Length: 96
Length: 213
Image (cartoon, rainbow over all chains, first blue to last red; front, side, top):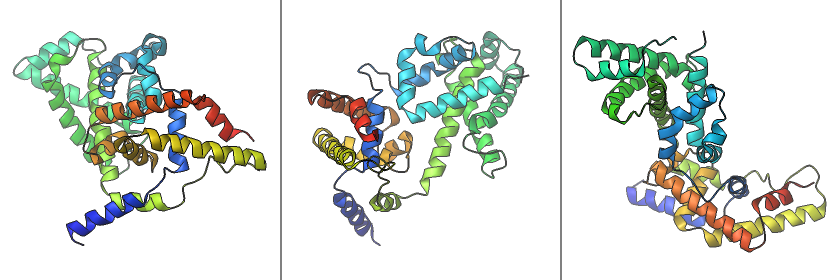
């Protein structure tokens, strides 16, 4: 298949896609429940993630102290994965 | 793994020349390697053939990045927590890349064409009225989405809605970055939320209409 044919085949598929699937609509609505006007970006979350996780491990109410970060973690799966991985490392790798 | 160094000791040794720096780097490499199995435990088992090469690669890359970004460490956490955070970003980025590089756009689009699980409409024996209400609501929300979203927002939403493509991978496919894509989605969400409010609806109400028996 030539590059042109390949592009055309993808374009054809994209054009045929006429409506968003139920799954997509559902997922979007579920996230909407949590979305706030104020927000931080993934990069801002990354900058503060170590501090946030340490607060949690120390038993402090990190979600109350850093609410925007918590809200971002609730709706961004990539950042949430990084948060959970860091929490696992700090909690488990320091166990005696 | 007990780490006895203070933040200051890490920083001063890593900034020094010669043996102290080498020793600190070697020690830091061990800290990273000790943490990675925990970090990756949800995605990759230590028995996986990908595991050891990934750990080696991530450790090297982490040490380079740490040295490069040493001045950006503000001391708001333990130095090693900051380093683990960097290692995790590198590892998960690499893992997502490896996991998604083989699934072509073609394949995604083919899957998309198969009937989506209609989890909004199919439920435990709903009454005909409930089915009708859900169908109407679904169509209404779909219409709002189609009217409100820009083509780019729509593309992002579709991509993220299929096969749980991670944000980072969707960003790569859309030739943008994760931050920009997150902003794009955030704007889309706010826009839709406002529109629903204008129509006298909240997301909770819409979802509860879908979920009622």
